[in-house]
Length: 297
Ligand code: FBP
Image (tube, rainbow, N blue to C red; front, side, top):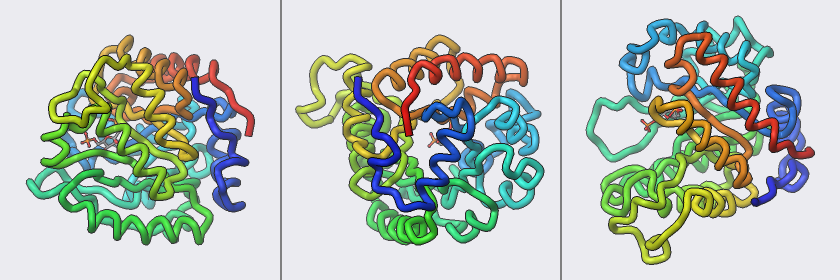
């Protein structure tokens, strides 16, 4: 098992350290782990994601779920943060997502920036989020706009969470977006580019078509996620949920991630696509896993 680097070793200025301390040690279980609730799907996928649980179309419902479920943060876009976070400001940390895109146009993956780190400060955020499409043909423009966000986050003492997502035709030809190769590379890129936390999909070592020789062969799930944690280095690793799946598959994903040294989980659809009682019960099961992996600040 890898050890999670303590906050003191992350090279953080006072503002970033204070905010991350609030997220990791004053919210959720307060034991250095994190369970985040992402809710930017209305932009990324549209209302189709709320079809199974129409209540989840209401931002108040989802933010309250984050408060009641003892989450370490809720990740939302500027519009929802301005009009809905207010009701619960201070009750659950805000992660303001600064870029995003719709799924409608068939263009090279790139998430344009639509909000600033200054706005995150004004809204009381404890972190900002940025989606970086690793390997996209638009990667040069992505890196350039990311640089501005990184510098603003540094200047304003705001922790930066990078959604490091391999996407695009070149990735599709090399094992796909969740291959061990692509996810491992994405974790390393986020570390190279200065992410404080990096969010990745769980790596699939079985996806080997077109991947480099180093990723061909027999790798277990725990070997793959262990390598990804190491590639993230001093960027704390968060594992995303993906489409709604069965309880046991998600619990196993959570267990393997935490055992490998991840800091936490960022599960959206697997939480708010359930009815409220089921969502709370499932979040409590995830919390039981996080409770087994405390770390000191
Ligand atoms: P989920 O746990 O629901 O997968 O949410 C994680 C997330 O990164 C969201 O923040 C984002 O809207 C969505 O996944 C993007 O998914 P994709 O890139 O597969 O469309």
